[in-house]
Length: 320
Image: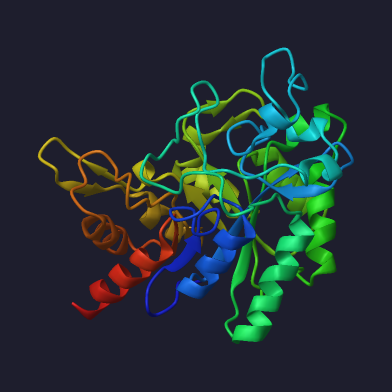
């Protein structure tokens, strides 16, 4: 799998989330119109085992659940999607991401207020929406679902992965030539997807930092040549965080790591996350510098909150 000649693919991170509340159909429609190549769907399950598009297993950082269903939190004070039916979730309003402890927006300059009538949608509803946009516009935009915390969902009595794979199959995402990347942080679930559940589509291993205690995933090992060689037997690419690909030193100079080159040596694509115009990595002076550095690193794709700005800068960079 290689990147397009024009440069890395642009993946709209939770849609055009830099402009409107994340994971809403409005965010996906805007990102589609802006020219993104793929639209991301984080997927969690409801109480009645419907796959819905939400970044977190929690509801209280992106909806009005604490007001609408006061008293339905767990002992930790949090509200979980899996404790509510789909019908109940459909009554919630989706808001710009905020800190559930103080109510302040995580990104202060982004969309504010409750206007817009934003709602939670199911994975099927979102895929149907994207496929209709593809048909009416003639632009073939792909999907990029992530299975969120599958081990936790199993503890709650739900096999989220099987539910997601059923949805993908219904809509024709079955093989590597289809416009879909399926991603997950859990190394053992990724192997299960390929080996036990026999998924034949493109599969991405998300890569965090250190060691994930819940799933037992060792991200540090994944970034070694031995780890990458093992991953190449199962997946088509990796999704590391930006700091694993490029870092800025005290003099504001960019330093590209060898991760992309090593991954390419084993035939793995690299799609780092997340480029944000309003939240640049420490030491990075401008969005243009970040985009130029990622092109220098030869990444195959990138997740971003502002796809229009990234697409414009990629175009400008390619012309120089």
